Amino acid sequence: MIALLVFSYFALTVVIGLIMMRQKSTLADFFVAKKGLTAFLVVPLLFAEMIAGAGTVGNAATAFKIGISSVWVNWGMSVGCLMVLFIAAKMYRVFGLKYGAISVPQVYLQRFDAKTRAVMMVILVAVYLIIFAQQPVAAAGIMGPLLGMNKVMLTWIVGAVFIFLTLTGGMKGLAWMNVLHSLVMYIGLGIVCFVSIKAAGGLGNMQAVLPAKMFTFNQPNVLTVVGWVLGTALSFFAASTVVVVIFGAKSMAAVKTGIIWASGLVLVFALFPALIGMAGKVLIPAGNANSIIYLVSTKLGPVYAVLASMGILAAILSTAPALLLICTTMLTQDMVRVIKPDISEKSEMKWARIMTIALGLIATYFGMQATSILGQMAGAFQIRSIAGLVLLVAVFWPRVDSRAAFWSMLIGGTVAAVWHFAGNPYVTSLFPSLAVGIPILVILTLMAEKPVADGHVRYLEAIEETAGLDDGLPDPRKPNITH
Image 1 (cartoon, rainbow, N blue to C red):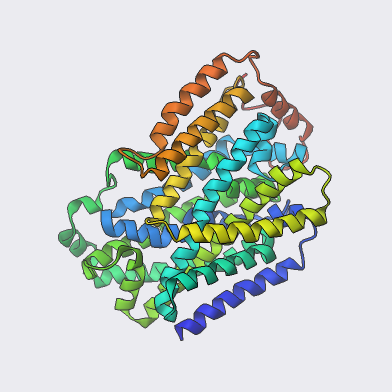
Image 2: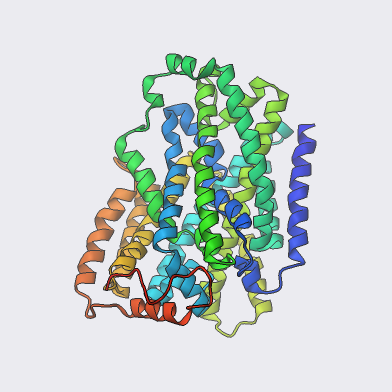
């Protein structure tokens, strides 16, 4: 019965993708659903990146070990989304309208230069592949016991399905798929959370049984929590899904409504898997952390096992194809088009399909080598945080030029990546990255020849020239930029 439901759910998702495949007409439609996203579609697209399989399975696994603090990674994403909305959304939107930008690196090209664009592309592709790589593993971890299949074989099968969905759906198709996934996630895991707390004797009994520190928000330590929240929030200034929404939404009003609703929904939803993991510590104290959602739901009964499994699958299916599509978009727009500026749309789509397949298979393999799902996701965001910080500073400091941006992103991002893959000794990768990147950014900016960088001038010109093209853009005669 459960296996039938799983296969039916996959089939329904594929059908949505195939339907949307017939509707897309241009590369821009495929990559970002240019001007085709309503607020109704913005919400599930953003909800997808902020939750993902790591935000369900990984969140519960971390909560099983350290408690309620596991919610901070997802909460940091909500904070980051809101910061982007009120600080940087205008910059992305006007560069999209003026220059036809459909990727984050293309905006960094306009605000800084081609070298900075290249660094941004490498950082983002690495980050999104790290996050994508966790999704087939998380799905296989849940589906394996349900279907009685070998986990390694199932991981490869799920990875192949994600590749197929990416190739067929396009961004608008993925948004429609995510409407379904979001409903399944909220209903399924919300019910399991409520019942699991009740089975564990209620919150009062859980507080009596579990260590008091599991109910505090500063575990495993304050520096790690700060690193999770600050690193994740800063990274969202360069978050491709958020930027795709800004490019693809019908208006800035749709962007604002979608981001606020998605952020609020995530604040609540993050509590569900965390509390399930903590209830699991009471109900099954010797259980495996990475499978605790499944173990708890199975203990509650077959109905709850189905609800939890479908909720987790929905979380994973809502995220993985979008991440892979974003990587393909950047490599196609910011590498292939640079190498072959006269490439036709047909050839570009061919390259996009080849890269989707190659990236999906490579990432699936490396995902099977990871140990901590949530830890990998948090680390990925912290690698991206220095790039987000550069853009944040550039919004308020017009002097920031391409040289300052390039070297701070290159060196800061490299330090973050090395620190992360070295196991984050002593502190999370955010702190050494910022300790190196911020001084470089400040010193080189102060040394800049021009008090207002050329990229900032282009931004102001773009505001002027796009006035009236978008009903949500502020009046260009009242810029919120300090000169």
